[in-house]
Image (cartoon, rainbow, N blue to C red; front, side, top):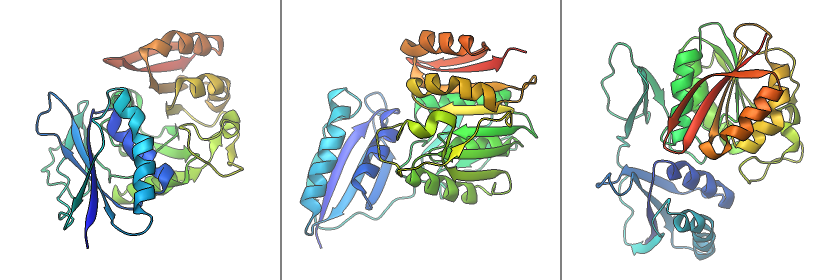
Length: 308
């Protein structure tokens, strides 16, 4: 059997977008991600493999159309298409990424000898956002390491792959992981099991407050009715790595969902510095004050605390 290989190089932030976009065409084939040999040019090389059968040409065209905007904006190279006689054996994913003082992101089968203080976050390549390589995820993890305390009750809104929920659980907190995308919910459930934190994390398809009326936050499709979690002073901390417009739409739901105590904190990420002022105005109007922020190039994450 011959195969069609689709390949492209990506930046750190684009690898998650590629995987998320593939879910829109129901891509069920193999994804191989490797470090690019010249890290100054690109971060990763992604290869997809489709069997040469009826329907593959149509799917290739759909994938090319979906990924072309990433190339036009300079986040990836152009998609290359080749016919190969034999699909290469899937190599062990050896990507290892250290974040903050303690977090280490790696694939479940990656060879790594952990250090005593390491907190391992084992994440499979999936069609959901949250590989651990996007700057917004990295910044979220840095603030999580600073602000999560044992026994906190935390909401991970837009949980994607589940990476942030796993980090929070491994710091001793209890987590409700919510996403309005079925693929993300499935990926998060698998990741929770692989990391052994089932007793600390509950994964649900749904959204908080008005979030269920906003459709799929990343432009995909959702069920006609998405379960709603009513915002009722339940959480000590909300972590939301989502678009700026969704933060702004939900800021009053954030306030109502937080316990009015010294913990009452939102870690907001998923946007660039261009949106920081707009978010600051929305959070200030809703009764929050900024207490911490981290930045990587144009990406930024901010911690807001409820004013008591």
